Amino acid sequence: MAKSTRGTIKALNGFNANNDAEALRKAMKGLGTDEDTIMKILTSRSNDQRQQTGCAFKTLYGRDLVDDLKSELTGKLENVIVALMTPSHLYDAYELRHAIKGAGTDEKVLIEILASRSQAEISNIKKVYKEEYECELEDSITGDTSGYFQRMLVVLVQANRDPDSKVNDAVIDQDAQDLFQAGELKWGTDEEKFITILGTRSYAHLRKVFDKYMTISGYQIEESICRETSGNLENLLLAIVKSVRSVPAYFAETLYNSVKGAGTDDATLVRVMVSRSEIDLLDIRKEYRKNFGKSLHQAIRGDTSGDYRNTLLLVCGGDDE
Image (tube, rainbow, N blue to C red; front, side, top):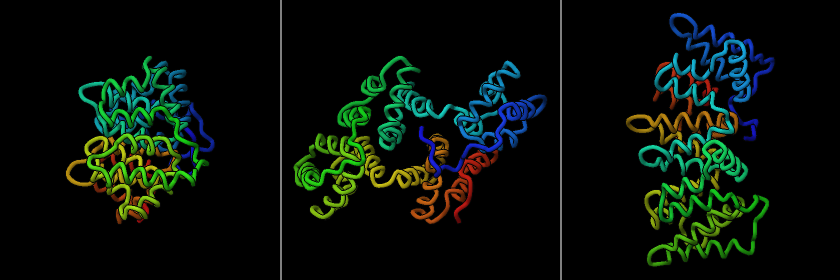
């Protein structure tokens, strides 16, 4: 996964895997656990450095660091620490597998990951998925979903979207017209058109299509999708449109939805915070502040508690109030 300068977590200068392994062992040995040390070390190292610490831990003590952490920690704190310790190139594949296997499908996870990842990231997810689970991601998805929702997911999994340098001005008008004809102007909806255009055109091209759509129809594309589709397909198409417009804004909204109202969607909160921590969490924070009138830091502080909260705030990396 490409590391960006817009993450809140960066590699630590002067990092020493053996020192970290020793400090973590000390924090877990004997009576009681020093959660503070565990949180502080693991949230101030890059994922790559955490993996090196895991290797050093095994070399020094013959023990598995993640197993030890699991036996010392519980509940939500355990979940966020284990997520931080998952190798970043495996994380999305693990989350998708978890969403598909087990009782019922967690469509929300499929939507969030497949609608927001770049073509290179999706290609990597497919490769890792096959290596880890000895089956194709596409087969797992088709075995667990149906209808147009399934078809849109399959198109996304192909990872054949046009490169972002490709904007075909000649086709922009046509695409906008096709979407208008397929939805607002039609009795019923021609979902195939939505699937093809939203699944294969480049982001840069689609942004122009959405502007043109607004001009000819008088509606934002999101409004039409809400009117013309429903359920999982609607949620997936909206997630794609939002990601096309701005991936950080899409994740800011995803985080906002995870903490608003009664109860917290902790699984989503942890997944987004951890998976974006070295990519674009600074941009997500900025969008959060802009769109929801308070900082992500404040939202997490108000909605979580204890060491779990402290860990998430360390990952968040600062307050934008």
